[in-house]
Length: 209
Image (tube, rainbow, N blue to C red; front, side):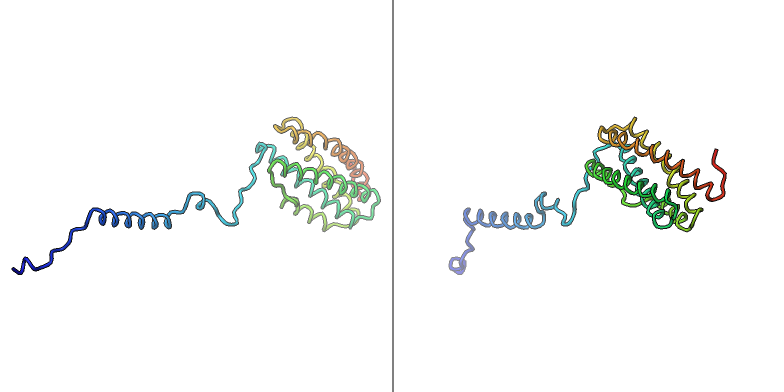
């Protein structure tokens, strides 16, 4: 009698079972959505920007970087000459160096930027050291060392650099820039060699053979 009166547990209907499955599936999907954001959201890094890829070969990029440093060294050394020298010929040459190398440097910087190459805005560490030693000199000694180092030696090195780029560059724009700038550099060297002879004599030194 008791068994007959005791209420029996109700078995879930098929619809109830499917409802619970649907709720569980929705909950799992919600959790998964929170834990795994879309791939596009994962790729975004605040404040990050991709560096521009170089559009020239490593060789041409190296030329642009070295040429930029050499140009800055010429300008800085010549500014020293304008400040320290009392020799009219030295000051005239130095002003020409500042004007010509600043113009060429601006063109080079624009070219490098168009090719995705970042160039320095200063001389190299080694060049800065040499400029510091030059700045410690005065009078005829300064004039001679300026003509020898910034005038002759630096231009010989730079001309070799530009001659190679004018012949061997893989980029038409880089090759054209090097070829266009060479005559100016060669004129600078000729003027510097004459100035070197004069400043050596003024400093009591024999002309170089």
